[in-house]
Amino acid sequence: MKAKKLVLLLLLVCLLGCYAGSVKSLLNRPEFKAENEPIRTLRILLITDNSYRKDEIEKFFSKCSSLVEMQVGIRLEILDWYQIKWKDELNDISKMEIRIAGDTWSKRDKFDIALTFVHFVHSIEALGATDTFFWRYIFVKEMDPYILLHELFHAFLLQKGHSKDWVMRGARPPYGNEWYWLTPEDRKEVLRNKWRDFNVMPATQQEEEMKSKESWFYYNIGSAYLQKREFDQAILFFNKSLEINPKYAAAYETRGIICSRREQYDQAIADFNKALEIDPKYAEAYINRGRAYYFKGEYDKSWEDIKKAQDLGYKISPNFLDDLRKASGRQK
Ligand SMILES: [Zn+2]
Image (spheres, rainbow, N blue to C red):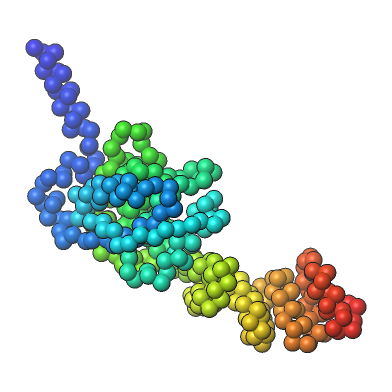
């Protein structure tokens, strides 16, 4: 009899203890439910590269949606699908983020979160990721609710990051454990940020640090457009980048290259000048300014820049040197 009681007691302790420290045991309390009102419907742009079947994603997605709704009153709704063909981004999460941001930029007002299902390459150990700029570009590698919920809650916990336990723990618990639950403190923080605007970069750091990060992000989207030879778009992003951080030498330099390609040499030279004002050891800027002078027929200036680049240890293409020699009538 005593033994039976003991077993029952142990069982009870175990049951209660199982979800201790998480919101799991609170879900059915009326006051808990009331705190989740009103429901926010998140518009999710689903992105797939055929790593998973659509119906598979849908089923998984709706399970996750109810797990999130129970805890914080946020419902996930599929707004649209986007099929992606990766280039060389899959070995680098920030490249993936920039690719997704660039590809979906024109419809950024229409969705809240872009959720990408993708098998990363083996060298990336992460099972999921969220960008730390807008906190809205989410990647999921496996169909485990822990991963999707973890990344999604990151988008509402912002600088708070990881907890020791439950869904916000930094590493996935062993298989079979349903660690899908927030701690009550994390839930409070999610509720505080529940209505955040996903088109605004949340201020999670020092202002200066934020600015350089933001500027870097736009610079990279611009570079991605440059690679696609979409120069107008690229320039828009370089302008944006420079608006935020007017001391970003690389953004001037790259914008100058586009102007050169468009044969707008004066504008190009103005950009290279800016880049060199900020960073007088910027060899590429000398080379590119030297080229612009060459195309303008200002050969002496061109030679000057080429020499500066050489002094900085840069090798100039022999073809260009030949052209410059012929056009200028000088040997060096
Ligand atoms: Zn995490």
